[in-house]
Length: 474
Image (tube, rainbow, N blue to C red; front, side, top):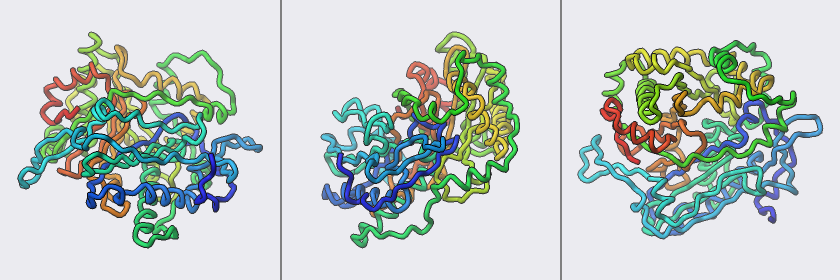
């Protein structure tokens, strides 16, 4: 595959990967952002040329690691190697969908506005793959050449909407880092569309070097978080030894299989406020919703499996940037999760207020010392990481909800020169039990997209408490 001419200016270099980067091999960062076509003339709106050229120039100027290849260098360091003669080229293409976008939309009345006939629309990814005739979008991988970055422009028959789908290796960015990258890409696209030139100067350039992060955490003393003690004491050992040098092991990690049993619940602004007031008005909507869903999932799992789980795992992701002395525009992996391992019998009997408080108490432990302990555990006891990944599941023994709150992330600024996205969606992603909370820009509510077995979800739909607030979309 011939290297693109736009990448001719890229320089040979190595970018060191951190332990938190390495722990993300085999996992992806994805999104499908759906834009209202303001031109209605097919090709010009979000043209493939605009998408492709702005992406490639951004890679040359600021993000060479997106065309690099992971390896262990001669000094034994895990790095993303950028060799101009052997780049890992992005896969950027366009798909013509033979159906209008409306064929894959679910709609609900917009109760937050007085505008007549103004419906809230949701993109049903399961209906799209079932009925569109479009094959599953490729997923990024380093186990196949020129497949680490996947970009697709989806053009629907009626041209009312155009979708931009992307999928990136999680090793390059955490969630916040990916949004920094995407907004920089949009900034390049706006400049190119306005001037016809690829000489954009970013208002706030990124920090992709991991040096500042490494130096900061070298000075931090780890603690002993309860969740690590829990997994050490309660999860059976895997019965296998891991080498002291974990980099080659993690780089060779197989791609984690996708979970295609995805569902979406919508919470209107009115139901969100009612939820917070009913549970605990001193809590955030995200924490109140986490408590509601965690308890409802224990009940649903009990009905499906015929037995009450022993443990309810509630996992909440946090951005590490505000908790560490690293540049605000650092794009690497610095986010961390807190795990609340709660006895399921207690979790299901607690008031929602007490459950929210218990989850928040675990969440308050997340600081730099906590993150350092996670890094140290990965480096010295990799088996705990793998054991935890097996334990975090929905089964007769365990209930698992892993929630990432993205409600205030800068999706609206992903403007490629035509305005921000109207509808946020998501391709299938890994790990059942994981959920992501997105803003809904149409009515000001939130969408909860999460992976949950279909049979369990059917029981969840029947949960009287959850049904007071949630609109089950698919």
